Image (cartoon, rainbow, N blue to C red):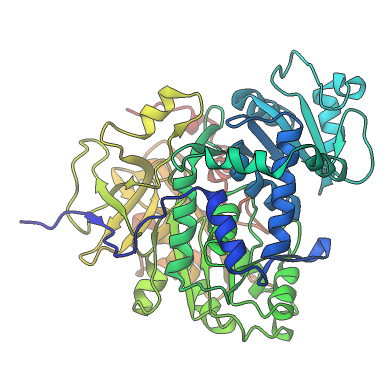
Amino acid sequence: MNQLSYTSGISHVPLLGITIGDLFDQMAEKYSENEALIVHHQNIRWTYAQLKKQVDDCARALMAVGLKKGERIGIWSPNRYEWTVTQFATAKMGAILVNINPSYRLHELEYALKQSECSMIIIADQFKSSDYTQMMYDLLPDLKTASIGQLKTSKLPHLRIVIRLSDELAAGMLSWQDFMQKAEECPAEALSQLQSELYFDEPINIQYTSGTTGYPKGATLSHHNILNNGYFVARTMNFTNKDRLIIPVPLYHCFGMVMGNLGCMTHGATMIYPSEGFEPQAVLKAAEKEKATAIYGVPTMFIAELEHPEFGKFDLTSLRTGIMAGSPCPIEVMKKVQTLMNMKDVQVAYGMTETSPVSTQTRIGAPLEKQVSTVGQIHPHLEVKIIDPDTGRVVPVGEAGELCTRGYSVMLGYWNNEEQTKNAIDAARWMHTGDLATMDGEGYINIVGRIKDMIIRGGENIYPREIEEFLYSHPKISAVQVIGVPDEKYGEEVMAWIKLKENEKATGEEIKEFCKGQISHFKIPRYIRFTDGFPMTVTGKVRKVEMRKTSVKELGLDKENSIKMA
C-alpha cells in the first residue's frame, strides 16, 4: 500500500493557553532588564520593563478615549516603535488590531476601514511617496473641521478617532504624545480588570490578504493562533533571552508582528528594527552594531543584502540563524546566506496569513539538502495533508497536490465574510492553501507552485519553481521568475523574466541553449525577457499576475489571450 501524504506534528511541549497580554506581563517581569525593543531610526532602546510601561500607558489611553473590548483599531504605518506598543496594548485591553498595508491607496484604505468597521485609526505622517495625513483629509474632508475624537462621517460611520504619529498638530487628529497622556484618565486597576476578562480564543487581530481577484479578505486571528505560532517559530530556532533578531520585514504582516515580535516576546529576546522600510545597508549595519544573532527576510531581501557593494565590510560573525520565507527560496541564495552571512542555522518557513502564519519549518541539524530544497517538516501540534484538488483524496507520497493545514493555527475565519470562509476552510477545519506541494517519506514538504500559477502546456503540467531553480544555476543569472503566457497551439507557453548579475550580458538564445539537454524540451522557455526587477508586493512577493499582463501586451498576445479554453 502506498504511503499517503499526511503528517502531524507530535510535541512534548504544550500549547500556551494564555492571552498575549498576560504572557507579555510575565515575560516583562522575568526579563525586566533585557533589551526588548531597539529602533534605530527613532533612537529607541528599551528594556522589557520600559516597554511594559509604554504598553500599559497605551492600553489605558485606549480605554480613556472610549475604546471597548472587541472594537477595531486600524494601524497604517511602516515599522516604528508605536506599531509594537499598539500591538501589545490592544492585546492587553482586548481591542482588535487591524493591520493596514502601508502601500494601500485610498480605495483600499476605505475598504479595509469600512469592512472591519474600525472605530479608530493610527496613521504615520508619511512614508516614501505616501502622505498619509493628506490622504486621510482626501478620504474624509469632514476630518479637518471635526472635534478631536468625535469624527462623524457617513462614508465611514464607525470611525471616531484618528491618531497621528507626529508631534505636530493636525486638524481633527490627536498626536501620539497627546494620546498617550490620556492614560492618566484611566486607573491601572481598570486595565487589570479588563485584561482579566479576556480569553485566549477571542479574536485580537485582522490582517487583510490580497487575492488575485476581488476585494481583500480579513483573516481574523485569535490570541491562541498567533501567540503559539510566534512561540513555536522561535523555539524551532532554539531562541533564548540572549537572542537578538533583526526585523526588516513589515510589522503589518505576520512575518513581522507574529514571527518577529511575538517570537521574541515569548522568549524574552530582543526585537531590532533597522529602518522604517527595508534597506539592505541598514540591515547589515544593525546586525554588526547590535551583535545580532538572527535576521528575517524574504529571498529578495537576502539577495539585496548579499549584493550590496559594501557587504564585505560588515562583521556578521555574531549571526547564527534566521528565517527566509514569504516566497520560494532559491537554493543558491540559501547556500550564500549560510556561508557568507554566517547564518549556518538559517531556516525556511512556509505558511500563510490564514494559518498565523507558519505550518512547516526546517530544523537545525537537518541534512543540507533538506535545508536548501524543502520548506521543512510540520510544526508542532499541526497537521498537513496533500490532496488531489479535483477529488479531495490524499495523494501518495511524492505526488503533487494541494497542501491543506489543520490545527490551532487556522484562523477563526474571514471577518464578516462567511462565504469566503467556507470556501477556504472545509467542514473538517482543513485550511485549503491553494499551494501545490509534494511530501517525501520523511514528511519534508516541497512547494512546487500555486494552483493558479501552474502552467499547462499541451496537456503537460509545468511547475514554474522547477524551471526557476534550474535557471538559478546559470552563472550570469541573479534572479528569475517563470510564468505562463497564452498560446494558440498549446494553450500556454513558458516565459522567463531574468535579472542578470551586475555587468553581465546574455541573449535569449544563450539561455535556451543552456537549458537544452538539461530540462525537458517543453519546459524550456519559449519567451525570455531581461529585466532590472520584478513587480512586487510590499512584503516582497512577486506579482506574477502583473507580469503576465505586461508580457501579453509586450508580446502582442491579446488574440491568444482571448481564446477560451475548455
